[in-house]
Length: 153
Image (cartoon, rainbow, N blue to C red; front, side, top):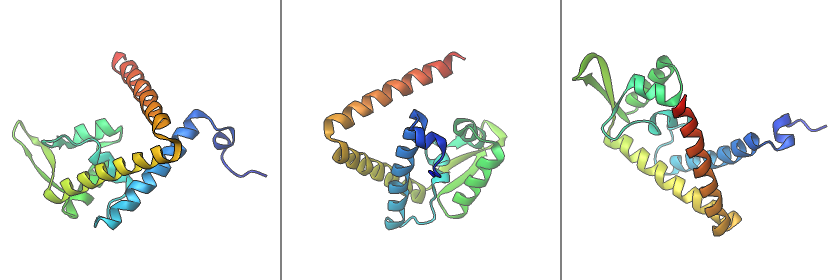
């Protein structure tokens, strides 16, 4: 009897996207330890993916990541304690705080981007440059359509 989840057995589009994403995620986050950042976990991507170049409010990070303010605060607090982030009062609203990457946090972000590019190159090595290019274009089209639908709501 096959014990895999039904979606994996049926190879739904969602399952295929998730399996591919999870494999890439393992490659990228596995590579972070070798680059000196063993404390960074996939959950931290909610911060690194959504923080603005000049920092972001905690509430903005939470909203962009689709999570509660409390859950985002937990991630931010852990990253701040590890020296990856700072949190300072927002000059426009003293009740709010701006979260910014430290030099160490910028190093993590640079490593994540480099590791992502390396993982993408490995995808091209697995399926060929042409197919990888087509895959990227199809995913860009899908992402644009989904973003347009979301913006229209």
